Figure 1 (cartoon, helix red, strand yellow):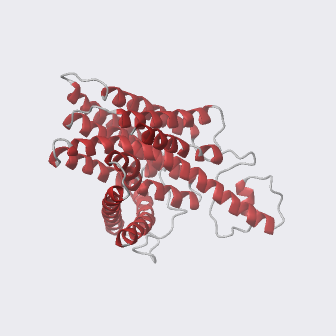
Figure 2 (cartoon, one colour):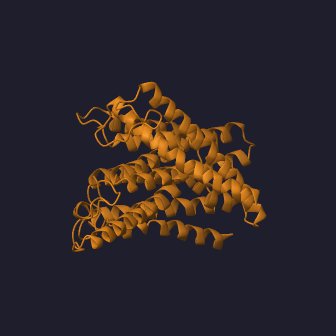
Figure 3 (cartoon, rainbow, N blue to C red):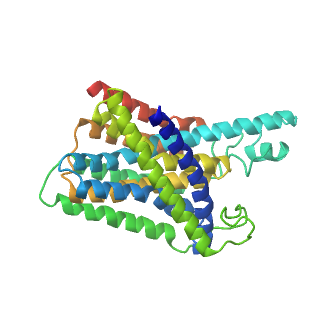
Length: 364
């Protein structure tokens, strides 16, 4: 019973910490004068994904020769799997939920249903919602830079295929290729942070939670709120994982199931929570940017650490995780290319995680 209570307490802590984190990270983007999307792709992604890279590093350096390597490689493969499937699926589900709420408000206002969500939001008198769900009358997601999202996914897929291929071969210079992954993220970081003339705006931001009465918060307060919330997210996530690792043997689950199927869900919970919070606030663009940016970190930084410090050889479960991740991103690119980018189809990305789970169980 204590473990269940601890799991629930950790989940609530992560959600509340993510609300405060998002609030602070949006103000940090304004202070740093970064592009509006860089708030999600770099700042938010770094805050929630980089602590997991530290876990990978600690496992590879200080873990046992076998167990430590398994944890490091499992984290490097499990993170992109969860973000590329469940996080996208949750974003689609939240968009569907938001659209349903808008339609309920529209019906009460006597508005015809076949209009855009922005019109629904206006006609429904707000109903406590923000800018609109980002779905047009045909059900497609709008208000999102799909060309940029597709470009990021293609870049991720190229890097990911390369890192999976390295897990199938062995040669003397292989560890040094880990440096290429750090370089790849460096290029991505520079591209996202470079000055394009468009900066994040404070026009629609809520006051900083640490200074709710100030129109423009102090820089020190923003940094304190960012650092404290990142610490809470990291600590609660690790405690969540520890409870799941206890539950695995108690339920008779093999270690590989816990390592690849359950633990990554806990470690990527902040990215999922960020998506829920941003979509609920009508900021679908930032939600998707955060997922895309987190995937780039997961594909490069933990992978570079793993390739440098472990044998980086894949067994069947790891190959299955790689295939499921690549299939999900290929599916997403197909939706974007065919102009079929709808909330319902985006929700379908979570199905690739289910398929991986079934395949994993069948191979054990």
